[in-house]
Amino acid sequence: MQHTSSTQTIPTDSGIPRHVAIIMDGNGRWATNRFLPRVAGHAKGVEMVREVVEACALRGVEYLTLFAFSSENWRRPADEVSVLMRLFMTALEREVAKMHANGIRLKVVGDLARFDARLQQMIASAERRTANNTTLTVTICANYGGRWDIMQAIQKMTLAHPGETSFTEDQLERHLAMAYAPEPDLFIRTGGEERISNFLLWQLAYTELYFTDTFWPDFNASELDQAIASFGNRERRFGRTSAQLVESKKAS
Ligand code: IPE
Ligand code: IPE
Ligand code: MG
Image (cartoon, rainbow, N blue to C red; front, side, top):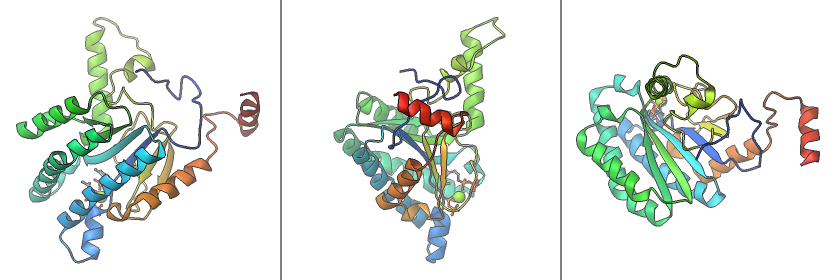
């Protein structure tokens, strides 16, 4: 399904975000604060994914997008990278059946070619199995970078239109890795940093940003509710004035 772009048409607004995108940050510091190895934070982080996925489904969120591994995370020590890959595989093994039973569609986006063949196969089979589910779409961004996404979209777009030199935003959007989802309404970053770290650069144009100091392993359903409550208090003007917004609400 093609979704409208926030820069081309003014989106309709409701109190519950249709699409929540999260940078799950702070696993390492959570563990270090407890004198545990960083991996313990990543393991606990996986548990919180389960809780937040369930909470989103219950609250009627339609798309949940989770940044699990960035294109820059390869810069980490090799042993931490390999632990993260193993955790990803075990989480897929353990969780996919349950997600499927709960009507969840799973997508994994990013430059997956760099992952080992078995992980790629597991991803493909999990996506196939859950493809027709409609309750909630959970997207895991793995070896994902916003710049990678824009570049691969440009490459696909130009290949699809040989000889053309002029393109619209709409044409580019169709080739972004998450073309199946609307732009995020609410962006959450846990762990205290206030930056985008090469997440969904194109799609965050009009997303409401929410930053919390809570480390990801402590981010539970009630923390999610606080973020959604904050979202509910925002005035999303999409370039208009406040008075225009009041008028348009009266009219509808
Ligand atoms: C987020 O937690 C998980 C990944 C990036 C894979 P971190 O591992 O970045 O935790 P901090 O930021 O070092 O605390
Ligand atoms: C962003 O967290 C990526 C993920 C959560 C997967 P990082 O911990 O890698 O971000 P920086 O390095 O602090 O910007
Ligand atoms: Mg971090």
